[in-house]
Length: 396
Image (cartoon, rainbow, N blue to C red):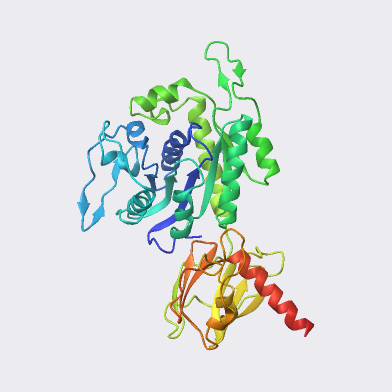
């Protein structure tokens, strides 16, 4: 699962949480450093545009912008990793007051308009929640997967579950879960106190069939070192928390190695000329070898038929006019009642796609010869409609 749209970057991993205050940025910084200590080339993007905190933990001064060469930022290097953050463009007393579209613009800027060079892993420290940033990221960036951060108490676990389900809906693999603030080990007597309950993330991982990458204990030195701009992994290499971060890094590397399988790469395909068409995969994996909701290849079977091969080996045909009639956008379907408002008689019998474009790992959008272009066809919907059409053909 290489990042085809970003040459030179092998894996892009989102670090996410359903809520704030679970230590996601702290874990992102220390996970990046732990990966670098393993000899990997690592980048870290602070995507909490409105509340950047990565610079202070890495000892980078706020308000000192990185160099811009040829229209691309040069990431600042600290403690063996490359990083970029909104905190480099604003000082302590200048909040970034931005509406949603501008936040999304900066998100893409910090990922795509940065000279990252060759990287093994690019970590994306996301803001909390399941809103614009997360959805736009899943649509625009070729993610290898997501890591979900939680603390052991129930309120955090419930919201972490929602974040996990959001990524599943857009076909972003869940690489694993990390339990932060798992317990406090007394430095004097060694007794561990579970301030936020115990084994919560283990139970959630079991319930959601997700891998638990590891647990990180409460350690006051993490805060002290972070405030000083020298992460605990650097300042206290023998600390229990440092070993915990290293263990999570090892587990993440294992998860990335195991997260293989054919996946349709990002594409922009001109239907009439064939320019940019995805490669057609002639292999036929067995039914237990892949996910029935993930396509591995598409082709123009004939001028009126789109053909899709799915990861489980099934091949389905789609009449292009039927696809136009099934457009799920708000112009064709009432958003509240879900009643279809598109008049079939208004769609020409000879309509064809002009262009098909991949939307992240979970959908395709189509620009049609009648000028319509706002529909996003999720792969879930395409699989279901393709199976339904095939069943009806067999019945006839």
